[in-house]
Length: 164
Image (cartoon, rainbow, N blue to C red; front, top):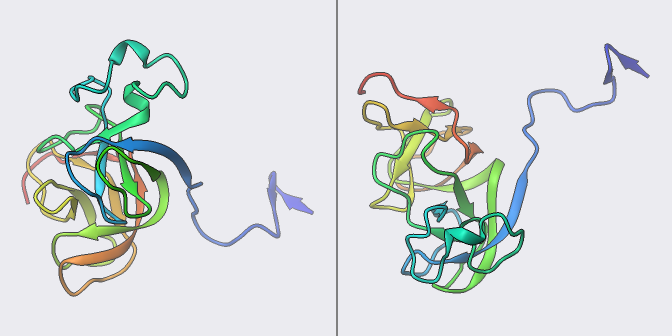
């Protein structure tokens, strides 16, 4: 039975579908589960050729390779992902591009905080600068740096209009 096209048996609350993929870690170092990375669309790594971005599954395509995110990344400048497992440099691993996920946090965060990228920790932070993009919302309080559950969108939720 449905009401307005939505099943009455559907889960209660907002749930963004989880999008996962496999990609090659070109960040220059090992990744831990929860670390934030960026797809290498510009082909900045020597093993990546942006000419193959239109070829699904090409090992040298930017959509198949991830690097460390750009500092102060704004929404619309890159696509982020979160490592779902420990991944050595130049190895293939699983990544989350969107959905609920456990992410590295660089500091204590409060449930509901809008989170930006902190390159120094390969994680997320609630301290963002002007025009820095928000890519996640905290789903729980954390007492310090570590990991926490977030609602993540690698394409971004929006840019901060003014500094914290």
